[in-house]
Image (cartoon, rainbow, N blue to C red; front, side, top):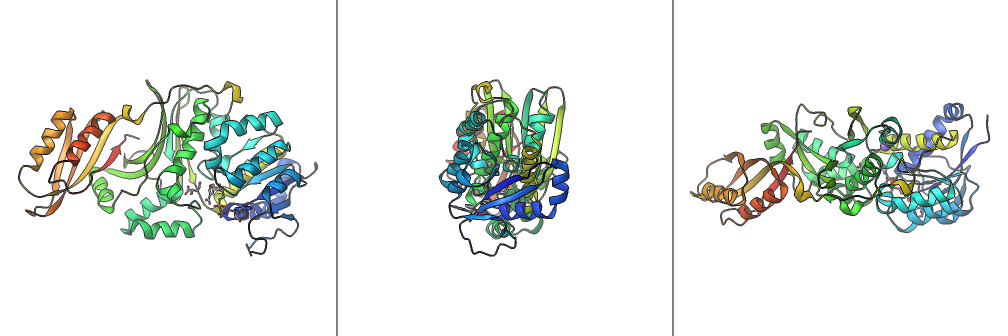
Length: 430
Ligand SMILES: NC(=O)C1=CN([C@@H]2O[C@H](COP(=O)(O)OP(=O)(O)OC[C@H]3O[C@@H](n4cnc5c(N)ncnc54)[C@H](O)[C@@H]3O)[C@@H](O)[C@H]2O)C=CC1
Ligand SMILES: N[C@@H](CC=O)C(=O)O
Ligand code: NA
């Protein structure tokens, strides 16, 4: 048995406590596999006296995680605080400067500053590990960076936010309202400190940024990600999707196109029989398409204490066993900058729901708008017939370039009888 690997933990919330519990419960098996024990020697959180249901009495307490990262008797610093700047970033930078390995679950931090932090880790000669930051318990970072490393990536996509998938699944199964279900996801420990990061697609954008870097060997480029969340998706849309043979999922998609790498996050209607549609609740799934391997899919819990701790501990065990890899798969100076494609260039089919005054001539106005913008309609259906009242009209467009679809929807939104902004959801054959 080698010398213990000493761990300092910054942040004792959902993920921090889950990690302490896992390390304690599986201490013996972890030591056997790593050929050395793993010991928590230092901890830091906001409130020293809070009962967290886990024992950290063996560790030295630090009020300031940055001081801990600099001074504690530790080989590895776990950053489990969150946030793309402030104390989380300062903690990681202090740890790397002090030559300590870092394990973090913080996708916001890495999506914003990952390239610089990877450079700092390289300069210090220590690993910066983040399996928990992408799709929680699914070992997708390891899979892409190691298991699939021989391939040239074509596309990587998936359900990357447990909170949104939980909300969409529960709304579909129970007909409950969005806000009610969001509160439940927060109680279960799935949501971010600010849940708008979940429901507005930002968290998925952060994770997609990291997947893009690893899969395509690019520096992180969060600014290039198109993001749209799930707030506008209603029970009506979920029901319409069902009737059309689809389910609605919030997806992150990164793909090579003739215009460059396109990174997009938005709700999608996906075929019920496809590989993504059946992934429910807090589960995430990531599908990768490589030139030699073809399609590979990984599925598992994307949020919550247990699954996230599982990924944090896997990273710790890699450090303990001396298994290291460059942060994004290749050294930072080999990451290749290239063009980023705009969402306007995306080609796909579209679902559009309108709320319109039920009166003659509305369909003719819609047809004119589509003719003028060169968009081809696949189907149109009016729900109900109530002259003078508001009724729902659902359309689908044949595959078209997004710029044209957007122009068409904008024209339609300006028709007098259209009383609410149209709801558009992209249809994907994924
Ligand atoms: N909850 C989940 O399912 C998942 C969370 N993550 C990420 O893990 C990280 C932690 O998330 P949670 O555990 O859910 O958050 P949390 O809010 O439950 O815990 C945050 C912890 O950080 C501590 N903290 C905050 N500010 C501090 C400061 N200035 N000094 C010292 N400690 C401070 C808090 O006291 C708390 O113990 C975030 O980056 C999050 O995005 C990643 C995957 C899943
Ligand atoms: N809030 C995130 C937590 C894991 O990354 C989610 O819901 O997926
Ligand atoms: Na993961």
